[in-house]
Length: 280
Image (cartoon, rainbow, N blue to C red; front, top):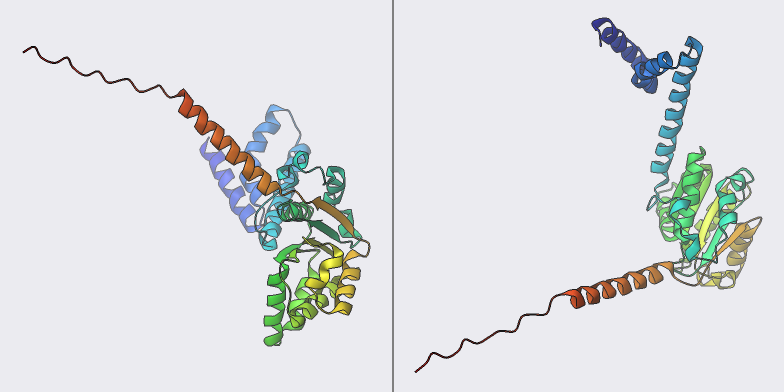
């Protein structure tokens, strides 16, 4: 690289830094060489630079949204083994991942026993929403109830409810594992009611709707929660067979087979031969 070229590159990077165009500054010289080799004109070269900047900005925004969502683990639909869970419709989940339900402010309810992939699917749908430019926030139902109770005690409840109302997709995980105190259940209903028909919710639960009264002890409140969440909702049944348990069982079986195979393949110990007694 000549001194003139190096100076020009340094000036471009410095100006791109001031203009907040990091991708152009980083890729301008590489794309210039590609443009020369393919005999592109100035307009095509400029278009390629701008396209790279836009792509990188979109990726950075997506990564920022994923970080702000507070997912417990980063999972995509590619991580979910639809072949191992015939209860889940791959085509239905793929359609949901396109994000149309978010535009229509519809909910997604993932219903099934423990270990059937509810949280993984909820996270994967949330990740897809982040990639599409949506704001997402993940929480467990118990953590949300505690957050709202603390906000109420600090006279900040309205701000907390409004904060949850602003996100495009709210994911409430593990509804049904703990019975909520009456005050916590009422505050949780406030968030659900605030979002009804204005923003999408993804809720995972291990309970059929007829047993939600074990979480929301007040019958009228329970009925109101079920109505809010199920209205125009997409219900995905994940079944009763625990994928985690089946997978652990398969790993354990494979480990036993491998141990047995190794033991059988080991050479038998050589028999010891006692020395002949010395002649008298």
